[in-house]
Length: 139
Length: 360
Image 1 (cartoon, each protein chain N blue to C red):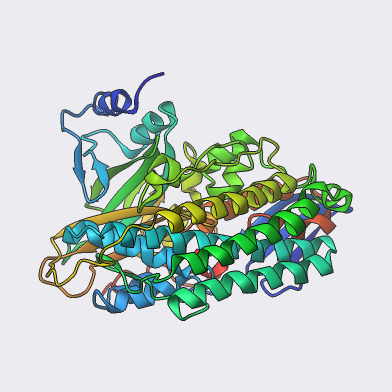
Image 2 (image 1 turned 30 degrees about the vertical axis):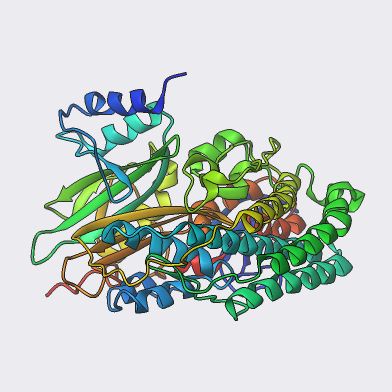
């Protein structure tokens, strides 16, 4: 059986990055390089990692949003940060159906578009405006 | 001809205020859509307006049943940002509180499941037993819910007489082993209402990323107490009950067996409770800039807290909570497909949904 450490070591190559894993604040962090979030999700599926959640952060001023994707690999908590300059990112819902609700929640809370999927209201009711719960109102 | 039956958000067949739109052919459910958000409180946003003491009291109110788990996870995440390590006695007390909370949550669920099966007497029995668990929790913390036990760097209250608590736990264990568990595991009524009903296959459970007893009842042996031990769980011996069938009966069995495992852990923790401080005494601390993340196995499964802080700030910059029901609830759609309409309240209850956790 392949050990968790060997699996962890194989991930940077799959994602085309030479960045090392950094263990900080209870998470093994890896900056995924130029590859997209969909390639990350595919790589995690290949390793049978369990999707946990996405955490969205609104950055100060006009710096945009940061998304942190979390998976569990044999009890190790993995984190992959993505800095967004625009207001959209590719959806991983079709590759990882566990991401459905959290993508919908972030869409509603931060008005962020997950490209390639359709939404039904989750926390908000029909007709209500997205982006009102956490994100500061756009002027 | 198919027709739509809306159930909820306020419905006698549901314990919690969410809505399920079911498409039925005759008495058989073909598909369903879930709607949440009826109890959204914006707690994550509110957390950004609270300081490092107030935020603990706030997050304790995310959930009325597993309130202790929320402060345990939050404090563990904040401890990662402050560099504080709770002393061994505090780690044991955290285990004791977490297992007592699991006991009262599972027994409460057993009572509700009994009521939905038509076992009204068992409902009363379960709630009577649950009261005894609540008595133990109250004797330790002074409260029946919202125990205020956790703080950054330890716990707020000691357990001065573990032997007295041990006696209460032994009495509880005996009562569960002699009444609740035999009825749930051997009764033909329980079997006929639960076996083969609301099946979630192992493949679907993995694909949906479900957690806790629902995952374990679908053959996924996943438990953070074993996979990524926190507090003093690394020093406890216990089994992780797993059932392969994925139906309501499997969820019933997993929780019944977990009640016994919780008693086993409680006996060990109370017997081995180390002497010493219950929190880091007089140690000043400061938050470093960054994100601290912690995970804990709540009664319903994995809870994750990501807490982001800026050095010098009294308030967190961001608190994100991923609760177990948020991960498990989407599975209801797959569980009710092909089920009889009359079974859907029991199927929904079988995930032990916590709605206040889900909406936050």
